[in-house]
Image 1 (cartoon, rainbow, N blue to C red):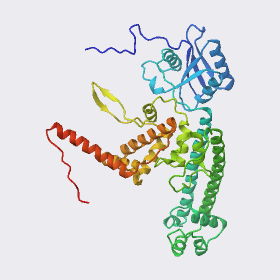
Image 2 (image 1 turned 120 degrees about the horizontal axis):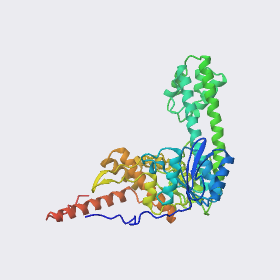
Image 3 (image 1 turned 135 degrees about the horizontal axis):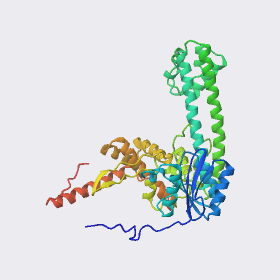
Image 4 (image 1 turned 120 degrees about the vertical axis):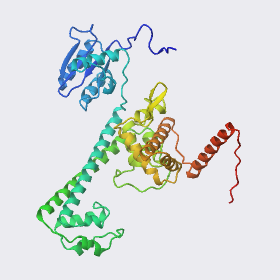
Length: 447
């Protein structure tokens, strides 16, 4: 029996965007194509300078173009995208994987023409890009993450310089960048060499004794390694100064996004991360979203900040929660042929929001909540990476429902999840026994 595809009419594809244009993005020049009846040269090349980008937009206006499709090539597309949006064009940022698998179409001229044709027939879908203010917040948040990685590298340089001098400080202190470690390192850079004097900077929370710390501070004070230690400490302080500037800028950007009044209700007391911003992020995020995302177990203020900066508070671009989880790459794949499932592996993605959800899911391993019980149940059924993806999928669904419906999340507890799981298992066993002509009889357990 033949199956007819109803999405395509018998007469062929219909022209949905007659005023569409296509642009192939490059680092030094862009190739643009318009419909063949709009200009004697429907394909032109424009340099990537600002004056040439304005000339490209003027050419589109003369050709009565109202919508443009372009590929996301590195970061070279951003200036042209922002300029065309300011000029009033509808711009679609398309995935290169959706258009590249066509034989014989791999040149700049053919690429832009192929984009123009596909967009004319409505065969391309634009990528999600949040509002401009959210994009500004996202850029600064990503810059802050880059500074944190740079600061971590400076800590590694400090540890390397100390190890080369046989100063085994990392063996008695959990963190060289902590309170005790920083006092000792700064005293060494200032010229102090006496081990007992340095060990006196020990904080009361350090488990190692002063004698153990003094023993670890006996080494070879070579000038070249001391110079490297001084440089690493200066880089660490410089990154700290830049992080403080980023925190101030993020606070201002969040203040510009305030759309709700009030303050979040008092929730669970959680330890504050050392790398968290130095202001009340939770209250700012509540005024931006209208709900408190940190009430979800596993999501702290740093994770919530990454999620909001990547997707924004408005999720109207995603019609359903399934569209949202599919964009994140947290749902199973649909590789089916002939009615047989060939694979259900989730797609690989570099989405920062996805990584934030997976980190939050991995933090549920010791949580005494319903989400923690769900994660441990998934770990018992499958390997850990799949369990992390499944738990991240559930967290993404909760965030979507909270942002779209404005409802707060309430944890039912670990016991609630276990009771529901038991009822579900008993229901399935009863149904299976009935099919086999048997009956399930509950046995009362002694108290």
